[in-house]
Length: 123
Image (cartoon, rainbow, N blue to C red; front, side, top):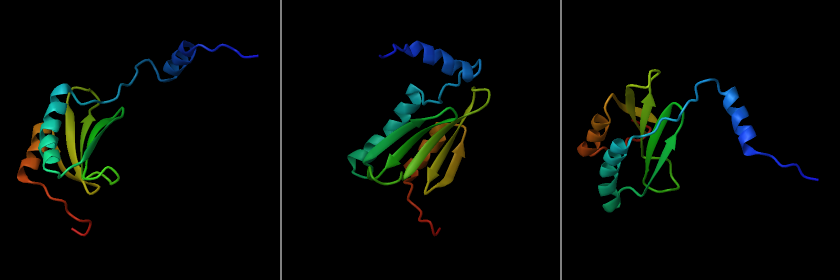
């Protein structure tokens, strides 16, 4: 008939294949999320931005900003983890290109105070 399977058996096996040190995804801290949303919220109020997404992977966390949900992101702010896990670096993407790089998320977010504008693929 049917066999009873325990999920714990599969979890233990999958952890064994990942090595002794489990790699956790990079995430934004509560303070970083607060900073990101304080830049995002006024532009939503003005109707400039409509949606956002947050992605976490073992090597980076990405906060993407959309004008419309169905489009590609206008901007993406990535937090990259280093090998030691102590220091992180931040990147600002726009139009598929890296526009700015910093060791501090505040430096990246300060660029939005300067009223960033989109640059087309032609320059």
